[in-house]
Amino acid sequence: VQLNSNAKLSEHFTLGELTKSNSHPEVYNIPSHEAIANMKRLCGWLEVLRKRYNDKYGVGEEPIRINSGYRSPQLNKKIGGVAGSNHLTGCAVDIRVLGMEQLIRYATILLDYADESHQDFDELLIERNRYGAIWLHFAVRPFSNRRKVAFIRA
Image (cartoon, rainbow, N blue to C red; front, side, top):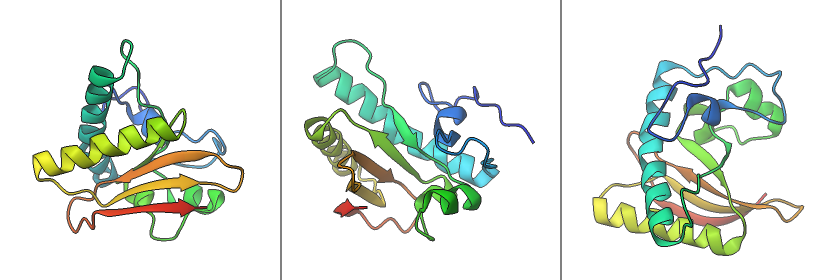
């Protein structure tokens, strides 16, 4: 099975961006049709984030960079992801940030959009690993969203 990594999930996001694994490219990571539908829903939010960030803070068309999106069970296990991770269903992304200021601006945009659009998200997590790297984890499920906001030290 091969993946069309250039397939567009939305105007600015591709299937390849949301399925790549830099740390374990050898691991099978092909999403189901359901996971692809979930990634498309998530990309709707990412498009809003990209547009609003660029309109307010950007100097040109700054992309949103994805560290991790969909993860197969094999990939999730290999990287030490939690068993019930939203990444397993294509409902979550980890977004690379240039620092805490950008992370907070991203989080604010997503929270404001949730309020304005009357849509819920499942998780908006500020995550930090033991080496000090930070990123924004954001998840949207098709239903049963919890609107969980937290700081997580991995």
